Length: 114
Image 1 (tube, rainbow, N blue to C red):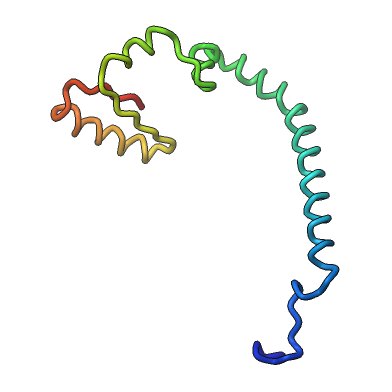
Image 2 (cartoon, one colour):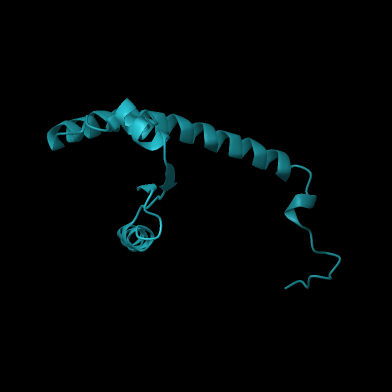
């Protein structure tokens, strides 16, 4: 074993070829990953589209996933103070519900969007 202070210790970054070789390998791995991801996406997309169609009612609110909201929704938020809450997991939704229940009596004119 070599000690850290030992003068014979050589780090990989000190070798002239390895940094250039590492960049080339990294670029090739990224290119292969991007190609495989694209192929996998196009192969899997019919399965997920069929799954959405079977589940039904997927069209309602689908454009909201891309940031397009209908005029009624925009109108309901435009003339008021709004608090936006974002919850992903079940625990976060439960905490949001408690927060909303606590804030509603204190802020009656505020619209809350989850």
